[in-house]
Length: 201
Image (cartoon, rainbow, N blue to C red; front, side):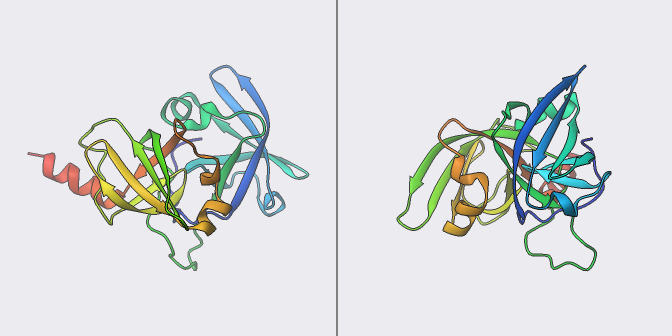
């Protein structure tokens, strides 16, 4: 499943490892293992690298989700291999603290990492995406990369950078992102609405 009406905040809970990949017609079933599998339930929405997917099966420490063709075309989920790790976030509880920003779990596009700069205590990651009026970043604005809520440092029409602290580097799959890696992007929903309003006649 791809389109969801629930909400995330971009605060990653843990990582999940791809255990099995099965193709059925145009769909792909991904089976993951994770430290929170026993807390999940069938029909629950969970963000995987920022992609909202529905749990369809649970067996011991493993659970399965299904990605349809639309999801596979729009995200980096199609590039996953057995042994890869994805960022996990369950949807926000109504009584939960809002620590990140509004994240829908709807990926807008993908981007390619074009530089990783060691800043002696943190890391600057630079990404390039397709030029599009809807693909907007602003300096000090919010961006979601592989499901992680981050602040934009530098911005241009096709590139932007973010800085990653050691905690985020260690506890998300940012530690596996290298030059050439493809990541999922969800642009700030407020910015997207404003951009659409300005283009309407």
